Amino acid sequence: MTGYQGPERVFSGIQPSGGMHLGNYLGAIRKFVDLQTQHECLYCVVDMHAITVWQDPKSLRDQTFHIAAAYLAAGVDPAKATVFHQSAVPAHAELAWIFSCVARLGWLDRMTQFKDKAGKDKERASVGLYTYPVLMAADILVYKATHVPVGEDQKQHLELSRDIVGRFNREFDAPDFFPLPEPLIKGPGARVMSLRDGTAKMSKSDASEQATIYLIDDADTIAKKIKKAKTDPEPLPSEPKGLESRPEAANLVGIYAALSSKSDEDVLREFGGEGFGKFKPALADLVVEKIAPIGAEMRRLQADPGHLRQVLVAGAERASALAEKTVRDVKEIVGFVV
Ligand code: TYM
Image (cartoon, rainbow, N blue to C red; front, side, top):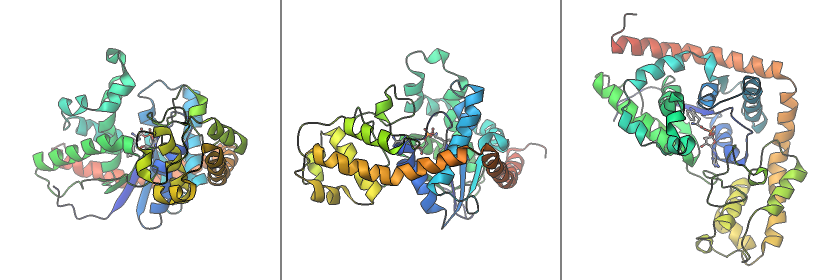
């Protein structure tokens, strides 16, 4: 528990390690846009996280602009929210070191994402990939963020951030210093699945291009991917219960529901009893309507990286002011000479 009394603040980040897709949009970016009107928000491009696996330096820079473009194209407004890149604010790395002395090996050993990403040959994974969640905790807490909008796959990392806060506040006898960050995960779209396999998460690194709808895909590509999406031969059920053990059907209904701001129930009320021959074209129209304009705007923004760089640098300046204050206070608490 913490007795933190400070202001509410939202922080989230996305790695520049591949193309932005529908999962990133529904699980994260769309929430960023909704939150910015009511809260102080910081949205980061976490380039230091991206290099925990190999990134070609030339594409890393482009990818960083790509994520910034996705934020802006989806409606994040740099006049309302602070948009910046992680490597421009060294306080993240400073706090991460201190947190790595607070977190326990046993906590990190439990992280399932490390196990998934490192695969069988964990001896060859970078040290950074292992300590990744500690840097993530620093990202959030260097701003004393109270709320973190993310997809379902980040839940365990957020729990680790909360464990670090608990131990830090307790060990250093500073019960009010850091807030316990709340994950904002709920809602349709928290876990968008692959179009080729309804049991696997839609991801930047899927071997099949057909599995992932990228925000940058044009209308034609989106429609083709949905047409080819894996399904089963049954018509859609009239109630959500009928989607159990039909992961591909459940995923397509979930995407429709998330993009139309309806519940699964509503979608099935409309399409229950229909085959995919009818549902897929309706879904394709909806995805094209919602996503293609974002892709077009991203292409426009990416054509002017100078502007994107300006947005990021100005954001980093604002973020630094907050982050440096926290690191100064933490140094004091830990007993460093300041
Ligand atoms: P990343 O870059 O893998 O993903 C960015 C965001 O998109 C969400 N997401 C999904 N949501 C629904 N369905 C999917 N298939 C899907 N795939 C991805 C993720 O949950 C995430 O919200 N560790 C983070 C980046 C990070 C961060 C942070 C996030 C670093 N520091 C501090 C929050 C706060 C990551 O790798 O996200």
